Amino acid sequence: MWILFITGVSGSGKTTVLKTLEDMGFYTVDNIPTEMILQFISLAKRADIKKVALSIFVKTEEMARKFLEIVNELKSQDKDDKVDLIFIDAQNDVIMRRYKETRRKHPFSDLFSSIESAIKHERKILDVVSDIASIRIDTTDMNIHKLRSKIVELFGEEEPSFILQIYSFGFRYGIPRESDIVFDVRFVRNPNFDPALKDLDGTHPEVQKYVFEDEDARKYLDMIKDMIAFLVERFKKEGKYVATVSIGCTGGKHRSVAFAEALKNFVEEKLNIKLVVIHRDKHKDSVV
Image (cartoon, rainbow, N blue to C red; front, side, top):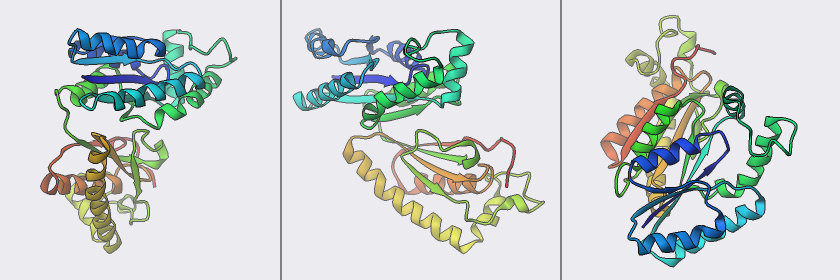
């Protein structure tokens, strides 16, 4: 049986994820009490259900610890079962905006005078759960349609293959929350200072040529390639099938994009894995 747990910060899109999985053939249960999880899984197996997706709302730190015990028990009970945890997240300001726009009540709003305080409280509770997530999805820049497409991409196969995501980003706009490892390329000389290159981005051959004429940039790229090749095999052994490598420069338009494109070529030529490349900040205003 394939058992998917969905949890994360309230307002980040858990309901959309669960409904999408239901459309894809998973038997779903929303906000199942932790005390009922093992019993439900046992009944589902008797009914010969092959794929289940269970949404979990973790209310307390004690519930979080109990949930971790249940996940570990499920993983040890039947080696044929595949047990994964999807953690859905978004930046605090986006979550606050979503609650204000929908006029919904945050689950912890009765305990705090502000949504921001409620979000911080929930994050503290979820810390230990987040640490064991198989997949982290940051919905900050996603609408419902993009999130649905992401879930279909990740879980549309009966046996999902390993997927490497490469993000280019600007530190000015924050590090992608999905990142498993982050490389900083701000030390590389900046095409933003060249008037002929300023308005281009890192997908342009002239920008790439400028970036990798720097010997340090070439050496660093080789080191990143070696690190990715090393980590992919370790992630697979760990049972992780989505890993995110993020490359950051100041604005996310030139250097990080050039590096991500170079890594894309390396992965496609040398590694037998599925690849997704996302230039998160490429179209935002250029900054030094």
